Image 1 (spheres, rainbow, N blue to C red):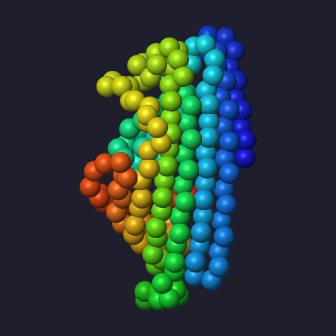
Image 2 (spheres, rainbow, N blue to C red):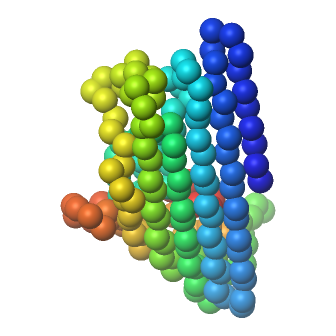
Image 3 (cartoon, one colour):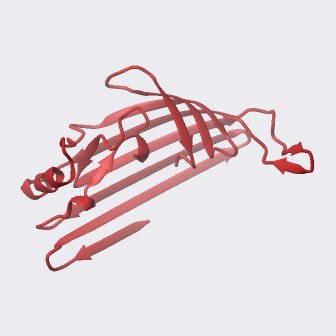
Length: 176
């Protein structure tokens, strides 16, 4: 998928983004990957057009919107192995809840961002106090845990590979 956006006038910028997603399912094993890339260019870049990367953007072991930039890339991979139990819906009186379908999950995420010049740095200053820095290279994290309901709910741990301890990771929604 490729998307482009362009503004002219007091807001003068262009934004180009691309996404590639792949998934392979073999029996109880699911392998998935996703790569998102984007660039914002132009003179007076609006601060809200910067890319903000962190926990909610796929880097589970980092803080909320910890990094910023007008150039960014995020790659994620995930391996799920379904556990052969709780694969059927569960009756509760006359109602049913969906099958929990537990799966062991291992993921690896990597992200990069940069501020390309004075306009990008000015937009960052307008958006964040204190400032959000670019990633200064590729930042990576790993996740280990369990996913339920077809991968829609996750519970586990995440760790940044360049620092820090393991932290609790709770996710709602598909990770890729």
